[in-house]
Image 1 (spheres, rainbow, N blue to C red):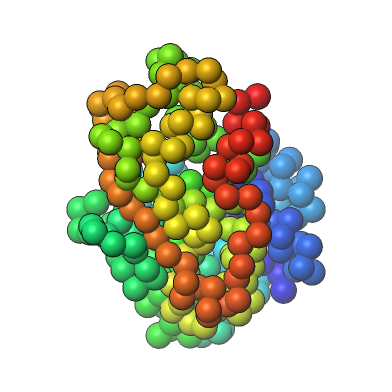
Image 2 (image 1 turned 180 degrees about the vertical axis):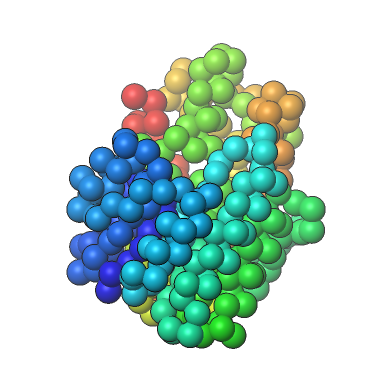
Length: 292
Protein backbone atom coordinates (compact mmCIF):
# COMPACT_ATOMS: atom_id res chain seq x y z
CA UNK A 1 0.00 0.00 0.00
CA UNK A 2 0.93 3.63 -0.40
CA UNK A 3 0.58 5.27 3.02
CA UNK A 4 0.36 8.94 3.94
CA UNK A 5 2.09 9.60 7.28
CA UNK A 6 1.77 12.87 9.17
CA UNK A 7 4.51 13.49 11.72
CA UNK A 8 6.78 11.32 9.58
CA UNK A 9 9.97 12.92 10.89
CA UNK A 10 8.89 12.97 14.55
CA UNK A 11 9.97 10.61 17.30
CA UNK A 12 7.39 7.90 16.65
CA UNK A 13 7.09 8.69 12.95
CA UNK A 14 10.81 8.16 12.44
CA UNK A 15 10.25 4.55 13.57
CA UNK A 16 6.93 4.03 11.77
CA UNK A 17 8.24 5.05 8.34
CA UNK A 18 11.02 2.41 8.16
CA UNK A 19 8.65 -0.16 9.69
CA UNK A 20 6.18 0.43 6.87
CA UNK A 21 8.83 0.50 4.15
CA UNK A 22 10.41 -2.66 5.53
CA UNK A 23 7.04 -4.40 5.22
CA UNK A 24 6.80 -3.48 1.55
CA UNK A 25 4.66 -0.34 1.75
CA UNK A 26 5.41 2.98 0.09
CA UNK A 27 5.29 6.10 2.27
CA UNK A 28 4.35 9.70 1.54
CA UNK A 29 5.52 11.73 4.53
CA UNK A 30 4.29 15.17 5.55
CA UNK A 31 7.16 17.59 6.27
CA UNK A 32 6.78 21.15 7.56
CA UNK A 33 10.45 22.23 7.29
CA UNK A 34 13.55 21.65 5.19
CA UNK A 35 15.13 19.59 7.94
CA UNK A 36 12.00 17.43 8.28
CA UNK A 37 11.88 16.94 4.52
CA UNK A 38 15.51 15.85 4.50
CA UNK A 39 14.87 13.34 7.29
CA UNK A 40 11.77 11.91 5.59
CA UNK A 41 13.59 11.52 2.27
CA UNK A 42 16.60 9.93 3.99
CA UNK A 43 14.26 7.31 5.49
CA UNK A 44 13.20 6.31 1.98
CA UNK A 45 9.84 8.09 1.82
CA UNK A 46 8.43 10.57 -0.66
CA UNK A 47 7.95 14.07 0.77
CA UNK A 48 4.83 16.23 0.83
CA UNK A 49 5.49 19.71 2.20
CA UNK A 50 2.91 21.07 4.63
CA UNK A 51 1.81 21.11 8.25
CA UNK A 52 -1.30 20.43 10.33
CA UNK A 53 -2.78 23.82 9.47
CA UNK A 54 -2.39 23.17 5.73
CA UNK A 55 -5.68 21.35 5.23
CA UNK A 56 -5.28 21.29 1.45
CA UNK A 57 -2.01 19.37 1.82
CA UNK A 58 -3.62 16.92 4.26
CA UNK A 59 -6.54 16.40 1.91
CA UNK A 60 -4.28 15.83 -1.08
CA UNK A 61 -1.97 13.45 0.77
CA UNK A 62 -4.84 11.30 2.01
CA UNK A 63 -6.61 11.25 -1.35
CA UNK A 64 -3.40 10.17 -3.10
CA UNK A 65 -2.79 7.17 -0.84
CA UNK A 66 -4.28 3.82 0.22
CA UNK A 67 -4.31 4.69 3.92
CA UNK A 68 -3.24 7.25 6.52
CA UNK A 69 -1.25 7.12 9.74
CA UNK A 70 -1.79 10.37 11.64
CA UNK A 71 1.02 11.01 14.14
CA UNK A 72 1.57 14.76 13.97
CA UNK A 73 0.61 16.84 17.01
CA UNK A 74 1.69 20.31 18.09
CA UNK A 75 3.40 19.65 21.43
CA UNK A 76 3.04 23.14 22.85
CA UNK A 77 1.75 22.57 26.38
CA UNK A 78 1.36 26.33 26.93
CA UNK A 79 -1.35 26.30 24.22
CA UNK A 80 -2.58 22.74 24.59
CA UNK A 81 -6.22 23.46 23.75
CA UNK A 82 -5.16 25.10 20.49
CA UNK A 83 -3.09 22.02 19.69
CA UNK A 84 -6.11 19.77 20.34
CA UNK A 85 -8.25 21.93 18.06
CA UNK A 86 -5.66 21.75 15.27
CA UNK A 87 -5.61 17.99 15.68
CA UNK A 88 -9.41 17.86 15.41
CA UNK A 89 -9.39 19.82 12.15
CA UNK A 90 -6.68 17.59 10.73
CA UNK A 91 -8.54 14.39 11.63
CA UNK A 92 -11.78 15.63 10.10
CA UNK A 93 -9.95 16.60 6.90
CA UNK A 94 -8.24 13.22 6.63
CA UNK A 95 -11.46 11.30 7.35
CA UNK A 96 -13.39 13.32 4.75
CA UNK A 97 -10.75 12.58 2.13
CA UNK A 98 -11.11 8.84 2.78
CA UNK A 99 -14.91 8.79 2.93
CA UNK A 100 -16.60 5.83 1.15
CA UNK A 101 -13.26 4.20 0.28
CA UNK A 102 -12.91 1.61 3.05
CA UNK A 103 -9.30 2.78 3.46
CA UNK A 104 -7.60 2.71 6.88
CA UNK A 105 -7.12 5.81 9.02
CA UNK A 106 -4.93 5.26 12.09
CA UNK A 107 -4.90 8.14 14.58
CA UNK A 108 -3.07 8.70 17.85
CA UNK A 109 -4.19 9.32 21.44
CA UNK A 110 -2.94 8.49 24.93
CA UNK A 111 -3.80 5.79 27.44
CA UNK A 112 -6.25 6.81 30.13
CA UNK A 113 -5.68 7.14 33.87
CA UNK A 114 -8.40 5.26 35.78
CA UNK A 115 -8.36 5.70 39.58
CA UNK A 116 -7.76 2.48 41.45
CA UNK A 117 -7.13 0.09 38.57
CA UNK A 118 -5.31 -0.61 35.33
CA UNK A 119 -6.80 1.13 32.27
CA UNK A 120 -7.93 -1.02 29.35
CA UNK A 121 -8.82 -0.28 25.75
CA UNK A 122 -12.44 0.22 26.88
CA UNK A 123 -11.60 3.17 29.14
CA UNK A 124 -11.44 6.86 28.29
CA UNK A 125 -9.84 9.78 30.10
CA UNK A 126 -11.79 11.69 32.73
CA UNK A 127 -13.58 14.82 31.47
CA UNK A 128 -11.41 17.87 31.96
CA UNK A 129 -8.16 15.89 32.12
CA UNK A 130 -5.30 16.86 29.78
CA UNK A 131 -5.90 13.74 27.65
CA UNK A 132 -9.67 14.18 27.31
CA UNK A 133 -9.42 16.48 24.30
CA UNK A 134 -7.32 14.02 22.32
CA UNK A 135 -9.73 11.24 23.33
CA UNK A 136 -12.59 13.25 21.83
CA UNK A 137 -10.62 13.65 18.60
CA UNK A 138 -9.96 9.92 18.50
CA UNK A 139 -13.67 9.22 19.01
CA UNK A 140 -14.47 11.50 16.09
CA UNK A 141 -12.05 9.49 13.96
CA UNK A 142 -13.67 6.22 15.03
CA UNK A 143 -17.07 7.65 14.11
CA UNK A 144 -15.86 7.87 10.49
CA UNK A 145 -16.50 4.12 10.25
CA UNK A 146 -20.11 5.10 9.52
CA UNK A 147 -18.82 7.13 6.55
CA UNK A 148 -17.04 4.26 4.84
CA UNK A 149 -13.60 4.64 6.45
CA UNK A 150 -11.71 1.90 8.39
CA UNK A 151 -10.53 3.93 11.39
CA UNK A 152 -8.53 2.82 14.42
CA UNK A 153 -6.79 4.61 17.25
CA UNK A 154 -3.42 3.72 18.75
CA UNK A 155 -3.12 4.99 22.30
CA UNK A 156 0.44 5.67 23.38
CA UNK A 157 1.58 5.39 27.02
CA UNK A 158 3.32 8.15 28.99
CA UNK A 159 6.73 7.21 27.66
CA UNK A 160 7.66 5.92 24.22
CA UNK A 161 11.32 5.27 24.89
CA UNK A 162 14.45 4.42 22.92
CA UNK A 163 17.74 5.87 21.74
CA UNK A 164 17.05 9.42 20.57
CA UNK A 165 13.98 10.04 22.76
CA UNK A 166 13.55 13.68 23.82
CA UNK A 167 10.24 13.15 25.65
CA UNK A 168 9.29 12.86 29.31
CA UNK A 169 12.14 10.52 30.34
CA UNK A 170 14.72 12.78 28.74
CA UNK A 171 13.09 15.74 30.52
CA UNK A 172 13.42 13.94 33.86
CA UNK A 173 17.11 13.35 33.16
CA UNK A 174 17.60 17.04 32.33
CA UNK A 175 15.71 18.11 35.47
CA UNK A 176 17.87 15.83 37.62
CA UNK A 177 21.05 17.31 36.14
CA UNK A 178 19.79 20.87 36.63
CA UNK A 179 18.64 20.39 40.23
CA UNK A 180 21.32 17.97 41.44
CA UNK A 181 18.66 15.51 42.59
CA UNK A 182 16.67 12.83 40.79
CA UNK A 183 13.14 13.58 41.91
CA UNK A 184 9.74 11.96 41.97
CA UNK A 185 6.37 13.24 43.20
CA UNK A 186 4.70 12.06 46.40
CA UNK A 187 5.83 8.62 47.55
CA UNK A 188 6.82 7.64 44.00
CA UNK A 189 4.42 4.70 43.76
CA UNK A 190 2.51 6.21 40.85
CA UNK A 191 3.01 4.02 37.79
CA UNK A 192 3.73 4.92 34.17
CA UNK A 193 2.95 2.60 31.28
CA UNK A 194 5.70 2.47 28.65
CA UNK A 195 6.66 1.05 25.25
CA UNK A 196 9.79 0.99 23.13
CA UNK A 197 9.43 3.11 19.99
CA UNK A 198 10.09 0.16 17.66
CA UNK A 199 7.37 -1.91 19.33
CA UNK A 200 4.98 1.04 18.95
CA UNK A 201 5.88 1.30 15.27
CA UNK A 202 5.00 -2.36 14.72
CA UNK A 203 1.58 -1.80 16.27
CA UNK A 204 0.88 1.13 13.94
CA UNK A 205 1.69 -1.13 10.97
CA UNK A 206 -0.56 -3.90 12.27
CA UNK A 207 -3.37 -1.40 12.84
CA UNK A 208 -3.02 -0.15 9.30
CA UNK A 209 -2.95 -3.63 7.79
CA UNK A 210 -5.37 -5.57 9.98
CA UNK A 211 -7.36 -3.62 12.57
CA UNK A 212 -11.15 -3.87 12.22
CA UNK A 213 -13.01 -0.59 11.84
CA UNK A 214 -13.33 1.40 15.10
CA UNK A 215 -10.60 -0.56 16.92
CA UNK A 216 -9.00 0.99 20.01
CA UNK A 217 -5.45 -0.26 20.55
CA UNK A 218 -2.97 0.15 23.41
CA UNK A 219 0.73 0.35 22.55
CA UNK A 220 1.72 -0.75 26.06
CA UNK A 221 4.63 -3.07 26.86
CA UNK A 222 5.36 -2.16 30.51
CA UNK A 223 1.96 -1.99 32.24
CA UNK A 224 3.19 0.31 34.98
CA UNK A 225 6.69 1.30 36.10
CA UNK A 226 6.78 3.15 39.46
CA UNK A 227 8.11 6.68 38.97
CA UNK A 228 10.35 6.26 42.00
CA UNK A 229 12.04 3.32 40.26
CA UNK A 230 12.58 5.50 37.20
CA UNK A 231 14.07 8.26 39.38
CA UNK A 232 16.36 5.77 41.13
CA UNK A 233 17.80 4.52 37.84
CA UNK A 234 18.35 8.10 36.68
CA UNK A 235 20.00 8.99 39.98
CA UNK A 236 22.29 5.96 39.84
CA UNK A 237 23.48 6.78 36.33
CA UNK A 238 24.06 10.44 37.15
CA UNK A 239 25.53 9.83 40.62
CA UNK A 240 22.78 11.89 42.25
CA UNK A 241 20.54 11.31 45.29
CA UNK A 242 16.88 10.38 44.81
CA UNK A 243 14.09 12.07 46.75
CA UNK A 244 10.50 13.26 46.67
CA UNK A 245 10.13 16.82 45.40
CA UNK A 246 7.09 19.11 44.97
CA UNK A 247 5.11 18.52 41.78
CA UNK A 248 5.44 22.19 40.83
CA UNK A 249 9.22 21.75 40.55
CA UNK A 250 8.54 19.79 37.34
CA UNK A 251 6.17 22.32 35.78
CA UNK A 252 3.58 20.71 33.48
CA UNK A 253 5.29 17.35 33.89
CA UNK A 254 4.58 17.40 37.63
CA UNK A 255 0.86 16.91 37.02
CA UNK A 256 1.61 13.76 35.04
CA UNK A 257 4.12 12.40 37.55
CA UNK A 258 1.58 12.76 40.36
CA UNK A 259 -0.98 10.41 38.79
CA UNK A 260 -1.01 6.62 39.03
CA UNK A 261 -1.87 5.57 35.48
CA UNK A 262 -1.03 1.94 34.61
CA UNK A 263 -2.53 0.55 31.41
CA UNK A 264 -2.97 -2.88 29.85
CA UNK A 265 -2.66 -4.02 26.23
CA UNK A 266 -4.18 -7.48 26.69
CA UNK A 267 -7.08 -6.83 24.31
CA UNK A 268 -4.76 -5.37 21.68
CA UNK A 269 -2.45 -8.39 21.84
CA UNK A 270 -5.39 -10.76 21.49
CA UNK A 271 -6.89 -8.84 18.56
CA UNK A 272 -3.76 -8.31 16.45
CA UNK A 273 -1.19 -10.76 17.83
CA UNK A 274 1.10 -7.86 18.75
CA UNK A 275 3.94 -8.96 21.02
CA UNK A 276 6.43 -6.34 22.28
CA UNK A 277 9.98 -7.66 21.92
CA UNK A 278 12.21 -4.64 22.55
CA UNK A 279 13.78 -3.73 25.93
CA UNK A 280 11.46 -2.50 28.67
CA UNK A 281 11.84 0.98 30.13
CA UNK A 282 14.20 0.14 33.01
CA UNK A 283 16.40 -2.06 30.80
CA UNK A 284 16.48 0.68 28.18
CA UNK A 285 17.48 3.28 30.78
CA UNK A 286 20.28 1.01 31.93
CA UNK A 287 21.70 0.92 28.39
CA UNK A 288 22.96 4.45 29.10
CA UNK A 289 21.97 6.35 25.96
CA UNK A 290 19.74 8.74 27.94
CA UNK A 291 22.85 9.89 29.84
CA UNK A 292 25.36 10.21 26.99
